[in-house]
Amino acid sequence: MNCVAMLVEGPTEEQFVKKVLSSYLLKKEIFVEPIIVKTKITVQQTFKGGTIKLEKILNDIRRLITPKYSLVTTFLDFYGLDKSFLPENYSEDLDPYEKIKLVEENLYKQVNNEKFLPYIQLHEFETFLFVDSEVTVNNLLNCRKSQLKSKIDDILAEFKNNPELVNNSPQTAPSKRIVKMYPGYQKPLVGTFVCQALGIDEIKNKCRHFSEWLEKLEKIMSS
Image (cartoon, rainbow, N blue to C red):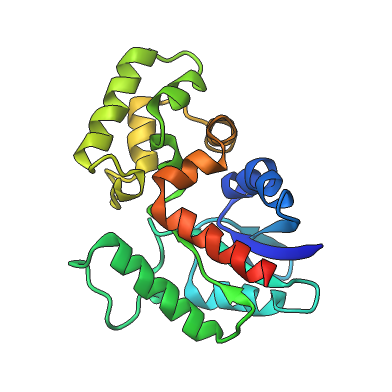
């Protein structure tokens, strides 16, 4: 069976891959192994999660490009991405999809290996909680569902009903908005429940960049 190493940002993405994405890809005879990025290594301990710098992710990617894996890919959030990832031609004035394209192209260029497929999530994992407001609120405990659904719908309308465009700042990133609306949000647990209820096909329908990444992955693995 084809095996893909998927470098993920933290436990939330790891659970998403294990409990949601894996079953979708297994139907296509693709096995995926999520691996949390190592952000710091000392003599006593290896640290995972947190801010990721380009040098660290490059080391992890190169370490994984071995005969064990048919492909190495990433699942990293654009929100909070270290500036070391940004190429010289990057500009804050660009369309979000153009920004992501430049960052991914730069990452691929740095790795320079055909067994690598870069993917940066627009703008972070919590984008998925804006895919379908009804599914999201139905998977949150102790919330005022109609009120919360209305708030999510209002945010989506602001961004042309495109979850991937919910923006990138310390105050307005998807996760910041969710926590503000629902203080009881538990990232790995709730996010996984919502995504399981949504299903990968529905996420693909609403998230263009995510869909394009999976289609590329599937095409590479079937060739």
